Every structure is written in C-alpha cells, then in structure tokens.
Image (cartoon, rainbow, N blue to C red; front, side):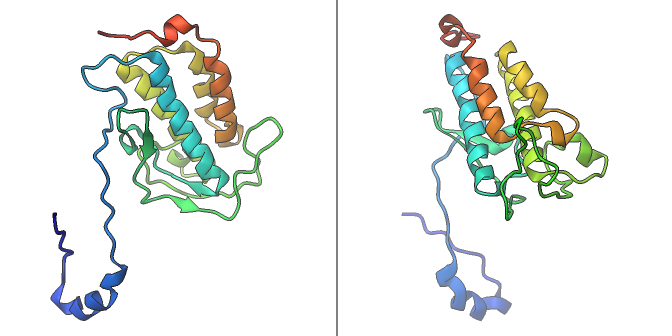
Length: 203
C-alpha cells in the first residue's frame, strides 16, 4: 500500500492537524488523452461513439447548470474500452439557470453572460474582448475538439461538417445548444452507411 503525505508547512501545522479530516485524495486509474489507441485498429463507429460520449457529457452538465469552460482535446480522456470523460474543472462554474433555448434550438439572448478569457479554445467573441454565454463557449470548444480530432486521426466525416459549422458560428447567439448538437449529431450519423462505420482508416 502506498502512503501519500500531504505537504506540511510548519507555520500552519495546527491548522493542518485540525482540518486534516477534511483532506481527501482521489486516485483514479490511468486513462489516455489520445482518442485513437496507438497502433491498434479503430473503426469509424467507435470514433463517432467517442464524440457521442463527449456531447452527452456536456449536455448533461448544461442541463444541471454547469459549464466546463475549458473543453479541449487534452481535457478529454479515454480508457480505450468505450469510456470517455472530461477532466480539468479548474475554470468550470455553476450557474442558477440552464441554457435559455429558443424554439429553433439556438441560444436565447436572455442567457447568463460571462467574460472568460482563460481557456485552450477561445471563441471569437472572447478574443475580441466581448462577453459570451458560458454554454455557447462550451459548444464552440466542443466543435473545435471534433474538428481537430477528425483531422489528427485521419477520419474524414463530411456528415459532421454541417454540425460543426453551427457549433463554430462566430456569433454565439446563433450557435446550437449542446442539446441541439446532440440531436443534430445523431441525425447526421444515421446517413453514414454500415460499411463506412465499420471501416478503419489505417492498418
């Protein structure tokens, strides 16, 4: 059994001993930040399933009023057994209300706004110094993740281009909500034939 010793500052020893019952360590199995298992065959179906997990994850968070605010390829891990998870919640925030959604599935102007420049994927409105919806910022970053993962892994999925185009809309008010993205994603992949879903882009 390994013992982890917490750093102890002598000047704060009493405070540490008083509060050490509230000190916790979370030990997790080691996952990878590579979407595709190195040197292993990987089908388009399993690749798309990784995106489905990510979109479902963010949709769930938004429904419960949480925004991640730093979605990127390096902040999504996998165990190569069909499970994916977001990490690094340092900048994430919880709000009083979930995304305000217009009838067409895009963000409503009444949604909460933030000024959040710190993130791996910064949407255009933030780069210009403007406020944005935290939920729309997540959608932008998720769109960048999907685009970059497809390029870096060799999977060309033209059916998803229309989905990511909306996610990367320069005006945040016109981006689809995560809930709508999930719906559009599911509709898009139904157009992909079985032989392509079972294909492997490289040996």
